[in-house]
Length: 239
Length: 336
Image (cartoon, rainbow over all chains, first blue to last red):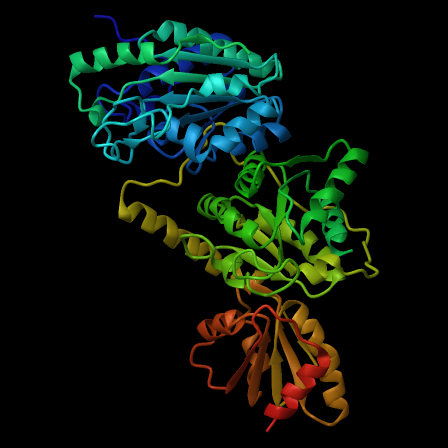
């Protein structure tokens, strides 16, 4: 039997990783790892993670990595990149960090065309804290703070890359992929890193599963992921 | 003015980046740094979207090994505690200039000493920080040079604690000829994975215990205080920052009248000058603490000098300044 192939940039001592079974994070991280390998940028990449499930990746790669505070990964990335512009700096956050507590940083870094790559893993709720509503929670979705289902009359569902398209400079790169289509997601991640290396802002949202908080079995999880691919527009988002 | 001096001092110290968000009475520090950066391309700056971003991008630049700083006041100082708590947890040598304005909340825009507790202990931790309370424009310069050196040497977040009066004050300042003395190198480099989130009580307990041991080991080297005409004194005034500056002419006049009065001024509020300073207060019969806050300074003293039996009189004027004349009257009232 052949051994499973993992990206070279993985830190082997920290595997098996700490994410829950069925979680989408490891798919995003594997695609990102392959993108870093393909571009041969491991020696100059800095990986920054937020609070929330993303923090479980604090020792995922053999890359200089630090966890920050909730929503504050983007400004750390901006500060680092400003004084060390040759590095490739990645801010890896959840939908709470990217779209709620840190939304001002997400928007402003795009507005300024800061040459960093922000990756928002969107599983439509706050996973680490037990499944509360996020700005990405979809119409009718049950979370611990929307027990009767979320109503868009109360709060719309945020469309991150589309929102950023309103303020992005033409050379910035914006995309939304899905862990349902990992190889397409990998292409987006690669293009995002390349955009950063050309000196531009780049942003990828990755739709992802959280069976634990969705309370879904494998079959239901796959169904829910298919629904998410419909609820959000997949692809590169142009201005 | 003082705020101009602070920016200039940061440049002389070897700082290369500033991240700031405008707030009175600290805004001229960022404005000056922007002007300096127009003449010197090695200086970077960013006017951030808020104070959290200013604090955290300062952390980002420090992680890259580049001496960097921010400046703020009052409500901005509250927001920046988010970043300072992380700097404390990961031993990141941020430097921040806190130009105290009034407290509580938004308050007034020019003066108080209400940010002592916040600056010394603002995080959900133990206050592993270094806080210099300056007393004159010259000290704004001198202690900024020192703050960068000390921050990178000991790896504790370091603060210059001044106030709006000092920030706006004009005076001649000797800029000296000293070369930058910071020994900075990248913190987040190959092989380094950092976190400030832990699984077990024992894990974080051990981290805090280690940090405390480090802090305790070096605190004597960091502690600073000033005495003014304290030799032979019966009564000691205790004050920090600009209140201490107002005490000096008061002491001179009282000495002229034949009263045995001197001044004890803590310069580092964290770590509070204890080990080296205690002897200078041994023969004092009475201590009068004067501050523009409700006991924030005397609280630091009482904790560190537990068991010290000299009578303590606390003159608290929350958010209000002192004149030398007023201080003379206070001493005359309490001298015997």
